[in-house]
Image 1: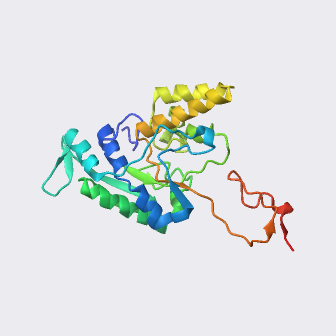
Image 2: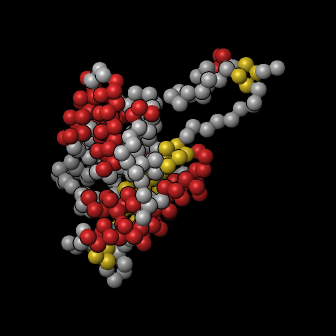
Image 3: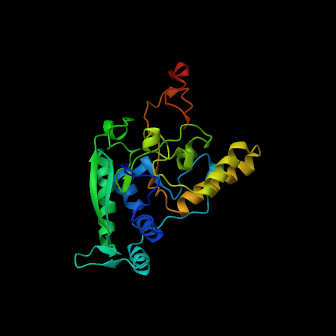
Length: 266
């Protein structure tokens, strides 16, 4: 559109159909990813916003169900072709799925690809060097804010116990585009008026209970619309001698944040 890929003036030819997004959500085998790849370094979650606990939504559930994914696509009119790939109105369910080069992520891609194939969705896998994928180079089309693919996977980190900054990743004014040199935090480019209103309300709400409810609503809007498909809530992992004292670990800072207070028990 006007010489710009992923323009805000366009809609995705496949993912604009809610049924396709719902099917993809049913095809992510979180339990296998957890068991086979991350183990104790992660835990499955249906939420994008997981902590602190007062912001954790209890309204969501995740499910891995290939049969149900097939039913959703059948009902939406996506028919299998001779090659087994579904199509509708001349559009085939073939998508490019990218992430950074990282052994666990490539295994994750394979798990999703295998399940998708059983539902008539063909996924082409792409791996990008991490230094390129996570760079802010506006001229490089392989960075994750450009999002020149149909699907992509990466880890996003909430660095503070308050989610205001973390949840602006889905506000319309943060949409990543050529106009802001691909620096916008909303790389999905999803725009929703209800989400924007809820975010602005949370920005000025002083009652902590009401404010937490607003963030739970934001999380639920993102999950129910399948804007993002959470795979794992990854844990921070570190090891030390059993005689080390004074660490007082926190999930919101480096393991070394209290380094001056460390001491070794005699």
